[in-house]
Image 1 (cartoon, rainbow, N blue to C red):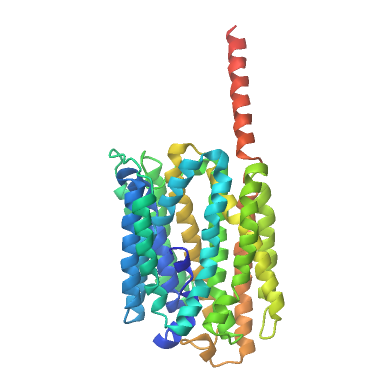
Image 2: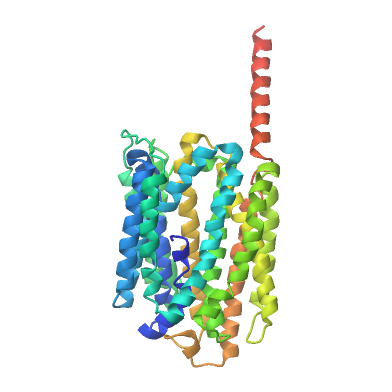
Length: 468
């Protein structure tokens, strides 16, 4: 549910802009507000899971997510819809990292690649299925049902969790890093808000530069604070490990490219190609097919050859699959676009979860919960930053100020050029992920553990020789 809801509203954004007579930069907060709320809530997951037990936290979070879903379906204005989407995200933010922590702890480092492959099915197919499900509901039932549909699914999930999830033992000694939360959460929110506000007057506009500077200051303050305390909200000392930093950086830019593209693509298909919400959602399905083809092999390969050797070729495919959309116009052949999305999906399947597996590979078991928080924060933050920036770029190149894309007072070719320029940014986000991915481990976890054991034995023998 939480992954589908990152993109389920995307096929409805054009309708929302038309119904509420709002700009793309205003309507994008329906998507960005949810992603940002996920990022704000995720850092609490490590502490809450340790303090109250993963099962209990997962069930409560799912209940809050359902409450936000019901209220979003009943929203009476764009502002109320954005507010309830934020509430929905605050509930959903802890669902994935808490579940991921339970699974990775059970699997152990030698099987983490295969576990990430299993989790990757819903991690990648969820955002791709979202537009399809959203298209069906918007076209046949109205946009409110893209939120109401969560209610029966969530109720079933809570019942299954109460019956089947293992009961984790709480650790009452853990304390919430309140100061860290008050620094990090507002800092992330201010930073993304400032980036979105650059649509009004650029970075020089006080409405943009003041929140950006404030956000950077708060995040910097959190980093300084987290280095001095033992139980920080996010353990920044984990970033001293190169594989973890590489995995986080790759995940961040992949989040920008994946979520940003899923924001722009439905608008392109509806606004430039004249497709219905359902058809726009179906045209995104090839990306899910490509991911489904690759995901089972990616986990297997990661455990055998190392994440670095899987992620880099995958990212190259993501870039190659994005390139045709930078040249897409009003008459680009659909077979070419479908093939491009299949290639892009294969690349995403080979890079998303293996990069996260690479981040976990050198961590001790007790660090998994904190690492899961950091990874998921960066993933959702990357998605929210990507959507906010792409909305700014697209709105600046689109004619007119408000309303749906198809209502803009300009020829379709002009609107198509605006999307082509926006897709160049999507390609840049994907290409930037190649830089941190180059530092991911190039050997499987078992080989690294054996090498580390050999090194420890050599040091021990050397010490005995010197003492003799």
